[in-house]
Each structure stands twice: as C-alpha cells, then as structure tokens.
Length: 221
Ligand code: C5P
Image (tube, rainbow, N blue to C red; front, side):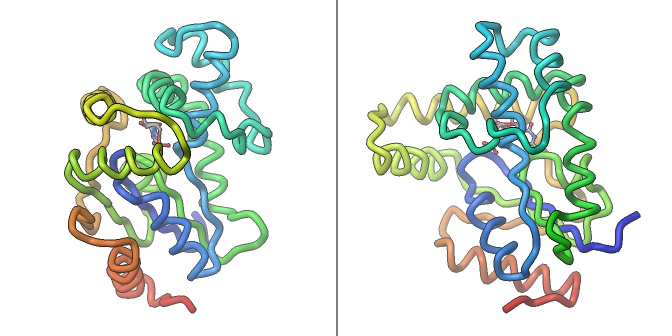
C-alpha cells in the first residue's frame, strides 16, 4: 500500500491526456509519468535492433532490459508516428506489459523527489497498473478531432503529413489498443469521463482539477 496520492489519467491517442496530466501534476506538485513513453522506448529499441515490433520474443527481451533511468526515455525519436505504431505493437505482448508493470507501480507508490503524489497517464493505469488510484479520469475525443490535433502537431513540427493517412493511422492504433486481449483501452468503472472534443486545454484542466479535488480534497495552487 502507498500513502502517496495516485491520479490515473487514461485515454486514446491525441485525446489531450498527456498535456492534461503534465498540467495537473504541476498544479498539485506531484510527479508525472507518461507510461506511453515506456512502450515507445521498447518499440524504438526493437526497430533499432532491426527486429519486428510484432515479434513477441524480441519485444519481451528489450522490455526486460529497459532501465527506468535509461536515456532512451527522453529520446526525440520516441515522438514519431513510427514509434507510436511500434509501441502499440509491442504493447499487445503480455511479457512486455508484465516487464513494465513494476516500474510504473513503484513510481506511483514512491514518487521520485519525495513528491506527495503521482500522476500517471496511459491506457490501463486506472484498470491494471493502479486499480486503487485515488482519482481516475478517462479523457477522450472523437477520432476525427484527435486526428486533426495530431495533424496540427505534425505540421507545427514541420513534418509533412497527409490528413487521410493520419486519420487511418489513428483508427488502426485505436483498434489495436481497444481490441487487444490484455489490458485493452477501456475506462475503469469508476473513472470520470472527460470528452474534450469541444473543449480547449484550459476547460479540460478546470474540469479535471474539480473532479480530483472532489475525490482527494487536494485542489492545488
Ligand atoms: O500514449 P502514447 O500514444 O505515447 O502510447 C503509445 C502506445 O503505447 C499506445 O498506442 C499503446 O499501444 C501503448 N500504451 C499502452 N499502455 C499504456 C500506455 C501506452 O499499451 N499504459
């Protein structure tokens, strides 16, 4: 058991959960873990080893060797769409998920820097990693809105992208994440559903902080 507060923020790709999680963590003085970066790191390392991310043996071997303080977790290559697709392929492998579980739980139970709590964002934080989290949010938006956001982000980074391809990639990743047998993307029964389709980042933040405050009594600065 843990005495620190745990906030779980799950949701599909480009739902805004990462931005929201970082902002909530800053406002509450909590540590933040983007759990997707762990799966992206495994995907990128498998590709760099010239292996197929869908190969369960190669993916599990990389996941077991991943160190929490590894420099790969801050590598800009993690942010590419290739990394995202590879991540969603290694993420269906049960041995990969098991290997990454301990790190996520110890971060949540003993947040680094002595922080009084932790915010973890991902796909299965509220359902599998921390089912006893103090507050759970499931952030979503329509697939069209999420594809538009991803397109804008790619354009801002100067990466050429075809709108119909971005939408198709988003749908493919949604399908892989939602239909996998282990830890699929589903809201926890007790999660607060936050549909950001018609919200900006400030509105999503205000709603999230109000919900977290009602569950934990912590309202932040
Ligand atoms: O959140 P992000 O887009 O960085 O996640 C990349 C991929 O990693 C997701 O599409 C998903 O397949 C996988 N993932 C997961 N469980 C998590 C976080 C991410 O399966 N908790």
